[in-house]
Length: 255
Ligand code: F6R
Image 1: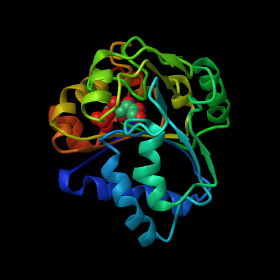
Image 2: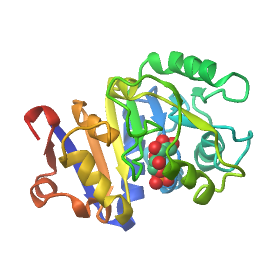
Image 3: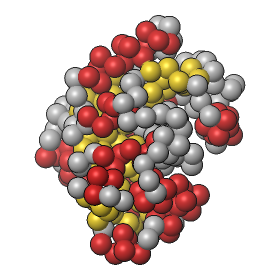
Image 4: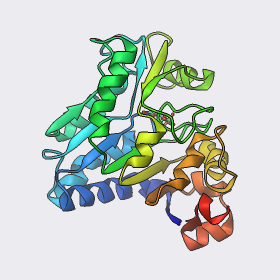
């Protein structure tokens, strides 16, 4: 089993990923997509309108499923994942045919997670994921396992600090709801998006250290179609063998 690795100069990364996504949507307009928010995908979403126009494709026939959501933040909070997805992507490219946000304003957290899982269980063609410096994907924090369901989660201090510090949350979130690793591993394809020097250590752990719940992203190597799209600073900690070949042997091959 192999993982496909694309390493791009930082200046080209977002356009490259946007073009790849636009090409996928052109080939498969009814794609069922799971999308993250945060600082990593933001420049991809900014580049997407141009990429979609150039590829003569769009989100209009696609289904978009939100990856995760904070609990305890008011509707419209700038850090909310649904707020960011709307502002950074949907307001620019138009609504998909189906949009599944996480209904934390209408439902109790457990009910919102269960309702979201119904949408996810219909299947994902492509899951885009960011990577936390603590090894999380979505809000599958350290301690999560490959069979973790879509659920309500407690968040790590580093994740809560990002909400308030980097994303401008108006208060400290009370927790989160996330698509579980089990559902992500059921997607037809996964693209792990990683940028910046501060992700170099964790990307190397995720791809080259033994699989462990301490770094939930390491379980992604079990997926038969994992693609890692990294910029050069994020890939700086990867072994030369790996970056030269552009192929990573997966966990089941003994790494
Ligand atoms: C956000 C999410 C998180 C982020 C991760 C990286 O929807 O699921 O897992 O992808 O925390 O965040 P950034 O991209 O801000 O470094």
